[in-house]
Image (cartoon, rainbow, N blue to C red; front, side, top):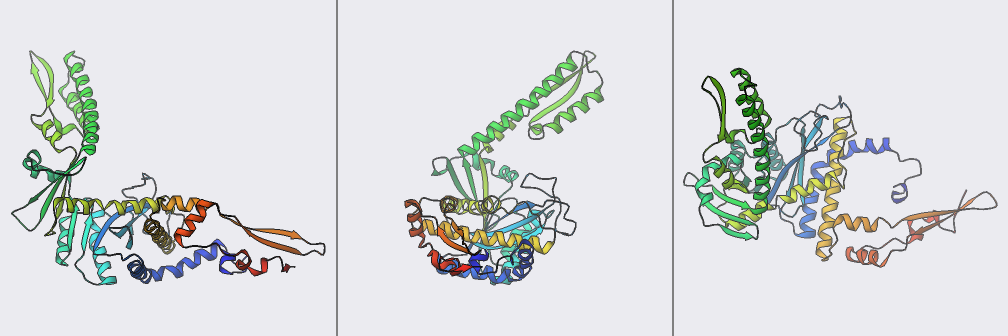
Amino acid sequence: MEDLLGIPEGKLNDTRLYRWLDKLLPEKTRMEQQLKRKYGELFEAQFEVLLYDLTSTYVEGAAEANPMMRRGYSRDHRPDCEQLVIALIVNNEGFPFSYAVFNGNRADVSTMEAILRTVERKYGAARRIWVMDRGIVGEANLAAIRKRSGQYLVGTPRSKLKEFERELTEGGWEQVRPEVEVKLVSTPAGPETYVRCRTRGRKEKEKAIRNRFSTRIEKALASLEKQVREGRLKNRDKIHIRLGRIQASHPQAADMYEMKIEEREGKLALDWAMKPGHQKWRETREGAYLLRTNLTSGTAEELWTKYIQLTEAEASFRVLKSELSIRPLFHQLERRVKAHVMVAFLGYALWVTLKHRLKRKQSDLSPAKALALLSTLHSADIVLPTTDGRELRLRRLTEPTAEQKELLQQLGLALPDHSQIQPKCSVDFAIA
């Protein structure tokens, strides 16, 4: 970095870079606005449809100096660590729009109002379309969007499916992909529209999960029934305790079964069976999910396609956590942690720029593969001592392969002339 930026050797170190993070953070809003403007110029990116999702990242250490770090629902599967929550907004092509950080114990559903105010403050009021997963959806959030004349297309909790049981069993489904069917239903109670969706792959997965849970609880119930029948367990209270433990250990399937203790011929007996009609409803809803929107136009296929674009936001988080190494956090101060997230956000901005430049050139390379291919290009100095105690330095660059040359040409990049990178390193200049 000293060489590229012309900084004297030894003047650059981690401590100075960390201090410069403090200067970067106040520029957050201006940089976001500049990115939005630049993406519009370079790729004609539109930001009327905004995809909103959240993730978390954890910190190594106690983080006692950072009040934002709290224990909460960990998407990193690290509940032992304190964390913060990151909210990311991208458009339907993955271009970053904005982001925000929240305390680690902040509930997903409570972040929407803050995000709406932040977006309005930075970019003004507009009739935006928000696409969100069901974890962020709440009646108060949807009301806040409608209050701002906004529109939404959101997932709904699984419990909402029960209200549309009849529509799930009837025909009229539209095939939008080999494994996906959708159906549009308007509600007479208001301006909202619901889209019922079902996926074959998702149905098979949920069926396998249900069968696994059912097998486990039935095995436990059969074992308890046998103990009661053989007289090894005679106390009614103890039987109730055992039943409670079985239900607590199998919460995913416990509501599917009826269980009761009866007395027959002076002996206790345990009876259990699956609730009538419950298995049929489970089979009907498997693979199904429900979308909710106040958009007044669009077919079921168009609305489903728009919602599936939410995977762009999920892909953004995968990039932040893997290629850009946003986790774990090692900074202890709140402002440094926020600046670290900002650097990762800017890194993602470069990442998505590379992605769309490759796409524009019809390249089949992903950003990860393109960077891996170019990572073998190196610059090296050959140091030659002279008889009078001085040194001669020769700057040499790796000769690119045919594949690397093609990629550089697609991106409109050229390797610098080694003699122009740092004149003092040329063979004609001696360093004492």
